[in-house]
Image (cartoon, rainbow, N blue to C red; front, top):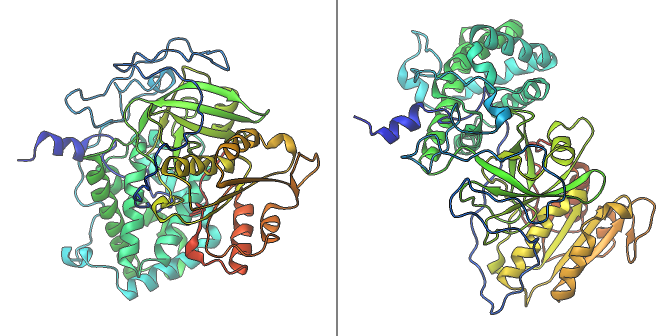
Length: 506
């Protein structure tokens, strides 16, 4: 008989992967060995009250930038008091008043195999990797569906929500972005299906990362059936018994990988953390710096990011980089720019205040640096993309800087948008190995600033051979920057960024 802990992992909300077919994952990086240096330089951090002895007794910030509009902060209580390491979704988790107003997600029983197998298909054949013929049939059907992808995905969700209304609460209210992600994921899976190891790595990361949606193992079966029916409707003459069998095998393989990865991850990590905003500072009209205290230990590396959900837009998650290295007090810092039609970003910049409670997904991203190697760094940060660059500088200071140099190019359109420049220059004044170069592409010169587009300015400085480059900012800037560095002879394996699958923003 399985232990109670195993049964909770198998059936509890958050026990398995993604809402429907998930988005593309990020690669995880290994932790480097820290270099040792006596008396490391510690960057200055905001003054925040110490963490409480017992959550949820979280005191208000000593220097709030914006008055709280939410009243008393909600209490943090785990759903299962005998399993405090697990943070399950569902009724009783005290998310916030907004979250609590939603009806709890019904608990579905553990399902048999995610997709029913036809009589012509043996269990053994389902477990084997996809054959070359399977991949050929899947890609051929996708080539027909792709021109009408919007209609095919809309039909899939219509089938799913009409036949299984209990899963609707797992999705955001607006489905436009979710529909796009579905087809991109199908294309990526089809194109990479011939590499089982890579497929397992990608789908496993998806299963772990999407536990935050509260999906059950039992949800995978209806999702698979509705997906197959939607594809059959729009694949036209490319659809037949062999094609359907290939898709069922593919979905069975993908869902099994995701379920196993999610359940393994649930043994050691919650699907999400609750974090109270303890400081909210407006740097410009559209940029805010948020300091958040998670309700339990949160592990991450400088250069990584996490997904955030606000109580005002349930099930809408957006990615934000950590703007500081891990701190002894456990606080997390994020730089957020309100973008046009950005639901989460506008809520975080213009509505969030100290005392509000957010939800945080696990840390992700491969834009980390092995400081033990002591390699010289070249950092390009555009706009709020300076956040992970600032975190990497802090981490480099913690591990010691002698023998290496760090060049930071900080770009923006106007001088007023260089909101982190004074802080970076303050660090450069104390860290002799750090150089900070502001770059402006628009009007309004700043003292000592270079002019031009950030990637081209970096290219004018000559060779950067021997360095490791880190790029963060608007996708167009990052792509141009990568191209410039490659043309200058910097190997691709020395260039780090996080544009895998175009991280969700807004």
